[in-house]
Image (cartoon, rainbow, N blue to C red; front, side, top):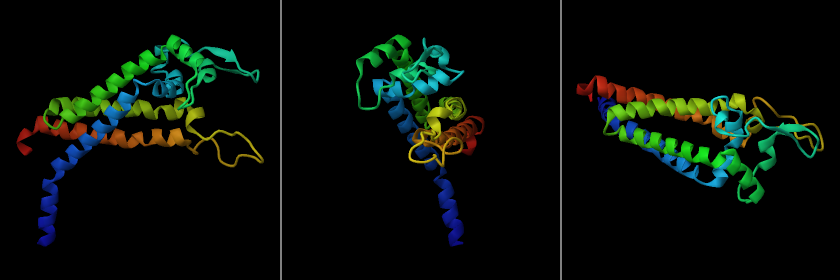
Length: 206
């Protein structure tokens, strides 16, 4: 009997659990989306956008190829990477001409808006349904980078004193491990989509 009462009480808290998930996703979206207004974050997403068939057209130089110092044909953006914490003016000029920052501003705004819609799902199920669906779709696009940008998301074979033992698939780099976590965000978006939809279809059950 005591266990049954405990289970009943926990079930009554499920609304708070769902709302905590909404708040958590909002925090992530607002923080990451807000950072898209800064150059270092905009520079960091260039490889993913440039290699994505869904987004590369937003950049002017996404498919430009050039010869690097090692006489190898490479994508042009690889010559203009700004390491986090370092400011190089010629790289900034290239990114401005490429449309890197304009796209990042737009993307950041969209991410923040999705986060707000998820949060508003606490009070407005219809908005929450849309927010949950968009969270799912956004995470799906992010996870697609595992396929479209493998050179950034898997450990490279850089050699050294002896052969690199672990590189390529399935050995995720630091960036790859972060991208993979988006599968949790995807699941969260789907759960909140379902919860908001239930409130719309069966409001008497809430």
